Image (cartoon, rainbow, N blue to C red; front, top):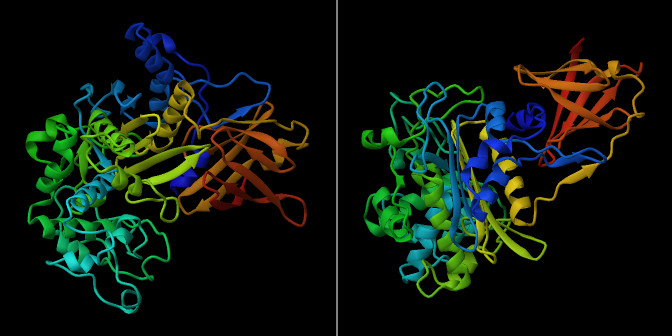
Length: 489
């Protein structure tokens, strides 16, 4: 359903308001900042039409995201940061560069780095069996692990065959399991047990459960609480002094935290929820702190003399293993350049970082709203244009105004799932669609019965034997397909 919201629930925003950022100053980095914040863009543009450039604050309102924190790295230094918006949508309190948010799954590459620091010290090897180092809990043996033991590198690269892509998250006032209870799926855990259900090393499958195993392994190796060992191995060495793996969030840090918000912009219950499986998604941090981490990775990749990791170690982490993933990071090559990244999605928070180690460039984006998933992509695209980063080229498409004789053929209500209905209407010479109560989005004619949107989704209307439109197929970002049946006008 997240894809459905992305494919359908994005509204038009025309024009930009760069004047609101003009007061930032005239230094080059601030000119870059003003251009990025006022130059958000869709992945699709229309041939022969002026490109849409959108303002960040306008897009925040569109996506119901109260706050965005950004850090941009250029030449392995933080060139600029921006902290825009409010800690809560129903409060006037503004965020600052020191406001912390949940980074969610961005926790994983930091945990992978902690493991690799121990590898550099000679404590363990990525080829070791994970059960060799697990003391308080063991990966249960079964037919798959009998064929191939789960190695540390399998867990780091999401190739262990571990279950639980997402880990448990707990609302305020509810019982929170220990890590061992979470691993075994025993009450009060709200997730199944973490088990191996495919032969390790043969399949890529994103698994937060695998990182929960790594969390227990790090605890057993260091004999330290997880927040403490992560501070010692990663956070403190790279200067992430405003960050912590602390779940639940201590009362002392609550005034610095931005509350999470749902897709409608309403604060989630209690402001934020608790993740006992901290390695998979428990990091509280700032955009600036994560930028320091990325600089440390970039410098290690380049072979800095006092780098956090050995050059060979850093490069092994950023070498694809399977499925476009290395050890803790998503990695790919765009043109001839290496790019690494990771996204984060916890209830009420969406985040991302993208890095180019050869350039020493990158960006971090933290948001405190579920709508931040689409917003972060628009921000990255703007920054990529400003800094010349590869991999974010805009697709310019031509429309076919004569492809469809009557737009009225497509008007009506189409249901994808019990609670998800799109309504298509004709507005002037255009077809527009809206998912549930979301803002309408314009559909551009591509071919007979086929339309596309500026966010990259394609709508193919399907006619029945009598020629009337009976259903619609939506091909969204990532090539996932949804099909909705027509309910009526």
